[in-house]
Length: 424
Image (cartoon, rainbow, N blue to C red; front, side, top):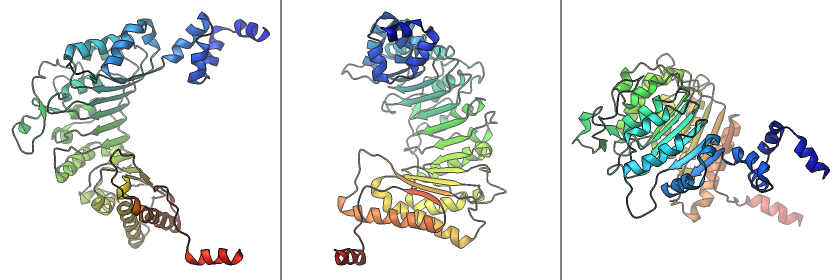
């Protein structure tokens, strides 16, 4: 009884502070105690909301009072249709607008869209002034239901505090890329998006390079998207990007993808201190400290889709940057080749002398999760040995390192076995 009286005597602000410290299951239990506990729990329960498909979104709108939407700080929303019958664009758009219109405290938004939404989705974002992280991806077949660059650029530019932007499988517009129409290789493009109105800040130029005019932007990730717009070279960036993660376009050749990424780096490289690569860097001028655009690059990440044969050449071409940390992620069946490639790079570093990668202090190799692993079980000893060999080389070079390989216990050396047998 005394503890109940003590709780009841606490001011509401202190009760809220206690609720914020509870685990999710404890908050759920607390919400069932009485009406006061329920209303205290509501803001915490709805801080993070994940709606994995359109049906879940509809159920949320039908059963959750709209007054609760204001408590959502992080929203992961998909318009993927799990039913056999198709859903019109305006139906999906209405549902998204209905939810976003009440999320006036939202800070982190992830949108997985089943193709484009109607254009009237754009004004809904002007009422979300606190969003700092935005992710937009297209989960629909790009050839059938593309998601226009004009739509996503207009949305992103409507968020005054946007710092981190992730785009995945965004399609170029015929308004900004007429040269791609009917050309080989085939690049899916969007037509009919000329009815997207001019943006108050960007005007009619809603192409991907205009993202660099969002002054608050600090981290930009673009994957599975054509990056061949020549305006990446011409745009005068008003943001100071710190983190850049560029993936390749599956419709383009490896050489073209490399060229496009080098273009972008030439424009925004001076402020970037962390970058992730999926394609090789072939431009040798990046190896010169006086010429490289990546003068502040200190953390380099190499993605699992990076061509293994290009690791050494790319590292050589990036030697003009003050790189301190190299992180490589690879699929399980590539671990041997990746470890050998990193070994070759470190051997080259030793041969070239102290001026070559003088700032390098850390090397990490991690295995990326994959639903389609082709790694043979009988090759596990070889993978473990390759990881062990690289780890030992890093130790010899006094580099901090973590080299992960699938769990496998290497056989003990014969002399160690004999010593233990003798002792027994």
